[in-house]
Image 1: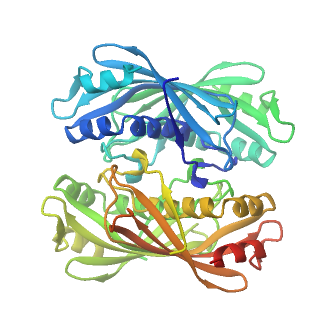
Image 2: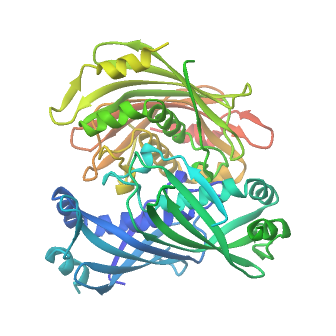
Image 3: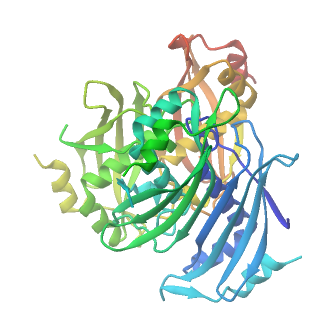
Length: 129
Length: 129
Length: 129
Length: 129
């Protein structure tokens, strides 16, 4: 996959089963997105353009424990006028895949109260080779 | 749907967009499951049988703000020998649907390191009319 | 103490030790504050007046597990012109005290970038008998 | 201060005020502790010796936003037989101090249900020059 970033695993991310709580996998994806596209993300936010998830799904393959390394790799899957799909793998960089996931994203104009066409800088960033 | 429970919306559940963070929707589903099936859930946990999510998906319809009421309704969709699917609606009880979601669950025996047949008490609870 | 509210204990609030994560005790206090003073809190927020914690402290007496009930009781300790202190007890309503805590709060005007005198409606609410 | 580690700031750590939620400052301290003393922390956990916070306090100096860098520096303040105090600074590495904090910690033997003398490896680690 095109983009990869390591997520700092926190003790508090674990739940009483001793593993990363299943909801927090989505937090890892979000953290990866906002790190990889950091400047664009912050620019859009300053303009009141919110990158919102309209659909999210995750298949859990292997639990993540407090001693595991966690890397999120991602790439754009499909880019339409106002929405795009990112697909992800959460893995340890050594062959263990923790999860596979997808999110469908829109860029929402807070003031006008509706989605806008995906900004060019974002479109270019997610499709770059 | 068969089972409903209200989730206490916390200020800290919101993110910098001012809405419930998208990952936290899954926390709401989990909280609803563990409240509705509370005794079974705690019994299973005491025995080292972990109710684990193997697949989760959510479609986001409407943002949840700090002043909103949030109710999770759910029902069993499909029950196989070792896994079952729950479907959910998160809504405000007055016609606004915030999200629709599904989770595929297994019951995992921590000591033996593998899924077990869904315990009878759980099977009965999720299929009860 | 004058004000009490029950906090919905979530499975995800626990950490890998199987107990409520110590940071989440402060989330429980915040949740209690925003429920007890709900209308005032939402009003202030709408005006860009943020209720901010400038100091927080907690003494942990007893761990909170996934099966425990958790009630936050609180009262105002000291009210100055621009800041006030709330003291709290987190307990189960049956004699077990989980924690004792204090927060010093200010009301911060986001636009002017500085604290304001505690609004009258809030001052009255926290001192009411 | 003797030990420093950078904490990966997550978008989801922010609350509806647009800043790091005040409870999450304590998560940052915990994350820093478990990174700096990682091997000892994981060893103790494997033995059922839980590093627990019995008292925590934080003074908030400056809000942390989604674009900020966050570094936790810490050092041991006082080391008794069964408890020790860590003091912390959360800062950006360029002169802005976000918070100053302290935690009093014990090492709790889960099976025996009581605190134990601070293990030698931990005592040495926190006092090392």
